[in-house]
Every structure is written in C-alpha cells, then in structure tokens.
Length: 81
Length: 359
Image 1: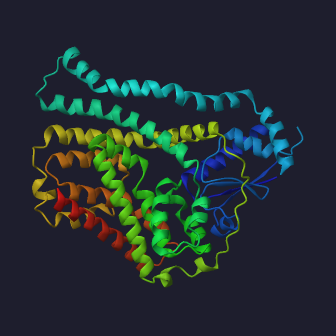
Image 2: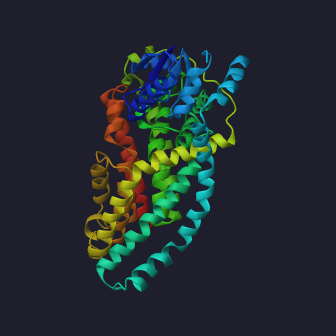
Image 3: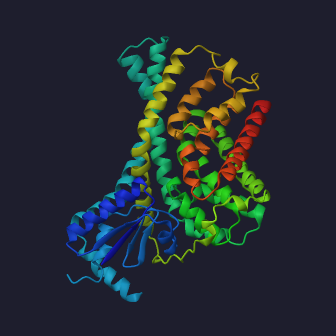
C-alpha cells in the first residue's frame, strides 16, 4: 500500500505524516509512506489545500487534519483482517 | 463505489471502542458546554466585580485595580466568545471547500468575480501555507488574476478571530465596519490588479502546471460530522491563539491603567495626517495575528488614537504579512508582489482617512 502525504512544509503537514505513521504502526499494515513536497505532484491530484493524504492514488482528505481513527479506517479498507 | 461503502461499513464497526467514544465526545461535549459558557458570559462582569471589590476589598480608584479588573474581565470574556464563534464558523466552513469556491468562480466576469471571490474568501477554509496550490488551482481553471487576488486579500484579513476580538473589545459596530471595509478593499484591489494587465509578472512555470481533477469521495457529510468539524476548529484555533490573547490583553490592561489619557492623540490622533501612512508602513512588515494586536490597539484607541488610524494599522498588520509575501514570491515576480502590496496598502489608507473624516 502506498500512502502519500502532500504537503508544503507546513506544521500540519508534518503532523499528518506523524499521525499516518502511528496509524500504520498501530494497525500493522504494510505500507510505504511518502511525504511529497513537489508542487506538480500535488497539483496532479488536483489538491488545492494542504495537507492531503493519498491512499493508493486516491485522495482521502485535503486541507485538514483527519483523526487517527479515520486514517486507520482508510488504510484498512480492503485489507484482510 | 458501492463496494467502497460496503467495505467502509464493515470497517466502521472494526474501529476500536476508544475511537468511537472519542467521536462521541466531540459531538456531545460542545452541546454540554454551550449553556455553561452562556451562563458564565452573562454573569462574568458582576462576578469579577464581586470578587475584586467585595471579596478582596480592592481600591476602586487605583490604577492597579483598574488594570487587573480589565484583565480579569476581558480575558475570559474574549475566550468564551472566541470558542463559541470559532465553533459556529467551523460548522459553516464545513459547507465550503477550495474546490467548491473554484467551481463557483470559474467563468465569472471581472467585477462579479471579485465580489464573489472576496465574499467566499471569508468562509472558505484557507491557510496561508496552502496559498501556492490554491493560486495554481485557480490559475489553471482560468480564473482571472484579479479575482484570485480578491480571494487572497479577503481570506486572511477578514477572519473569525479578528471579528471576535473587535466585537468583544470594541462592539459590533466596529466589527461590522472592519468586515465591510475589508471586503471593499479586497474587491477593489483585486479589480484594479485585474485591470492592470500584470499577467507577465506571474512566474512562467505557473502556466505549465497541469492540474488534475480532485477525486475525493463525495459522500454526504452528516450534521454530526459538521459539529465535530466545529469542535476540531475550536481545539485547533483556540489552542493556538489563547496565549496571544492573554498577552495582548495583558499589555492592553497595562496601557489601560497606566498610560495617561490623550497620550496617543499627538501620534495617532486625527490631526496628525501622516499617522495613517506611518501606521500602514509599520503595520505591513509587522507580523502578528489578530489576537495579539487588537487588544493593544484597543487600549491605544482609548488613549486618544483615532479610529481611522487604528483601523488602518490593524488591517495592515492582519491583512498583509511578510510570510505570505515570501510564499507568494514562488509564483509571482517581485514587481507584482510590490503592486499587490501597494494597491492593498493604498486601499487601507483610503479607509483610514475616510474614517478619520467621518468620526
């Protein structure tokens, strides 16, 4: 599973990365976490507000910090339990 | 898509119990705290008076008492107001997003676009840190530069923290004046920049950016989720600005109690015509949020500063900031940043003079 954090170096962006790492760690799902700061990649997803979380190419949230439980929900969809 | 929902449902049940409790607290807590806040707010003044004069027997006429009373009364008052308003605004903002705003602005002619962009700038959730993706997104869908600027002026200038402080410390008239003149400045600076044909001062690479279409799952946001959005906004904003409010009101209280009446009249009074440009020149590079600056400004106003000068100072501190310019430098060439700051600064000065003339 590929998790991308689209950020611009803002405080919230780093917080999202930390939250995502925690969520991945706690659910024990195998995932590659990539913090993207390149603006073109951000725009490719059509995201206009950072931070954003992209799970396997699908934008799950943009412009706000989700709760850790929400992240867990997104990353455990389609995972064998 | 259907499959997604099905899976989603299953997963919802799999969320650990603590998580669900957490979500419940986010909904129930605000509803429980609201009445307590209202009661506190109503009895605050008599309560503070009672504690200070009856219980502690403090001297009513001393400067120290006056300063402490001001502090003890204003800090909780502004914090209660702030929590309440930020909560409501958080709920309102959950109905808006940069994408929806962009869609609404697409293909709008100049003046109409400026008016809409400025108004939407107030309610769209926006952080200066994402000014670049927003700017690129707007450019990409063909929204005129001038309309984009209207948004970028209004969004930071007219914010809920500024309005709460103005309402709490000055009264609703001033809050209303600030919001409406801020809106007018945003509309016309954007309109003027649009007329100036400054497209060539946008960095070339901006035109080469290709934006994809955002495909976020659009499922219906429930009202419970909106209440949670309000709760999150309160935690986020209040935890960030409370310290500035305490310090700002503390400094304000000191000025309030100790600085002589009419002290500011010669520097920031009506008769000093140069005070407005000076206030703006000092205000633009100054970076403070509304929470820190407004209480101080309120105290200055009491000591003889005039309303126009005060408004101009406040607007230039809050509305134009150096960090925002540095961020925008990535997409705009220096001449355009300069034009942008000048047009808005001139607008602010005009507002300042008009108010000094009226009052």
